[in-house]
Amino acid sequence: MPHLIVDYSANLEQEIDMSAFCDHLRRAAVKIDAFPDAGIRVRAIPAPHWSIADGNPHHGYVDISIRLRAGRPDDVKTAATQAIFAAAHDFLAPLMASRPLALSLEMRDIDPALSPKAGTIRDHLKD
Image 1 (cartoon, rainbow, N blue to C red):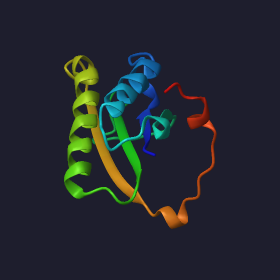
Image 2: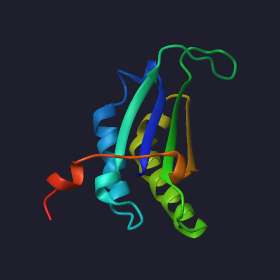
Image 3: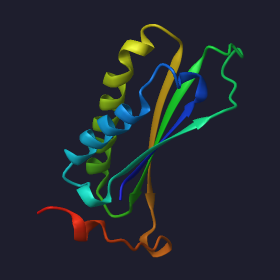
């Protein structure tokens, strides 16, 4: 872990290169010592239906949820939250300057006893 899930309004499909945005977030996440490279997952899911503020269909949103295995100190999580949010904001700043766009992020711990894992990615990573 961590898993970064980007939920966004589908009206942004033509304005944000989501593959590049996901990779930008991944590159920011690998710089965080508390995030093991092999556990980082970033994905983006468009919401085909949304309604924001006054209902103007031009309004858009990007909401980032970070699911993180519990056990890291609060100061580490705070620093990680700030780093990922800054990376997202930097990437989206040009678009935010030209259209109504809400950006949010939430990090939450996952109880490891309730979240079993299995995988072979680590077996295939270069040392």
